[in-house]
Length: 286
Image 1 (cartoon, rainbow, N blue to C red):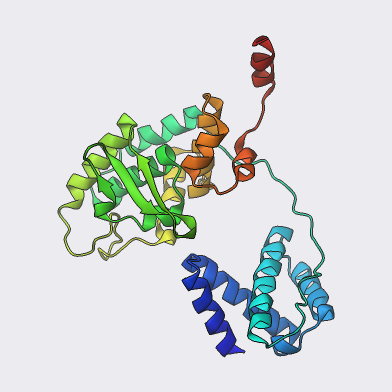
Image 2: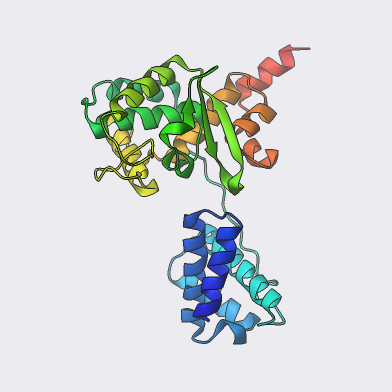
């Protein structure tokens, strides 16, 4: 079965799945095989039920179990195409309810607090990068893997300052840089970045190689702690705050959907929380 897992991984890479997704899907397959205690090719729907029960017993959240089911459903579709199995045992897997949580969004006061804190960061590699990365993520709403994949050449100034990068699904995206705060932060980092040669990456690790997603997550968490906001500050909180603040200030849903790189506007709609104030403002339009 290891041979098919490697082939499955290669297929996902060809399909431009992100490295983290490829890693997670492969691990989910190995976990299922381990719990089932047999080769995936001989598994039945009863093995799926036992797998889900075991995950629940181990304390997995429903959201994690749902993702694992999706991973394995894809793997068995792959095995079916290869002629290894005739039936996908995950096709009829029970649908678990995923509870929606109130998603954390920064207030404007908290954003200002972070920006003030970053102003006190030292003029060092980590200090300058932390400032620039926060500004890129908040003012452009980029995904963390998109930020990690940026090259120096991704930022161009002529005829206007833009950031060009490959987004989810391998699609090229271009975002204009218009925020004065972001322009200043980016210019300062680009100037500081010239001190380091070699790697083409825009953001660097301590070893002067491309920074990893995990390192950026760690830096954002530290910014939250340093600014007094808390350790639950994450790259996705910044992305969510970017979208929510744009919608609150009158940007239309379709534009925000495009800026976020969402394929489906229903995903963007999750950020469009209607407040009582908004309701009153809308009714006054008549």
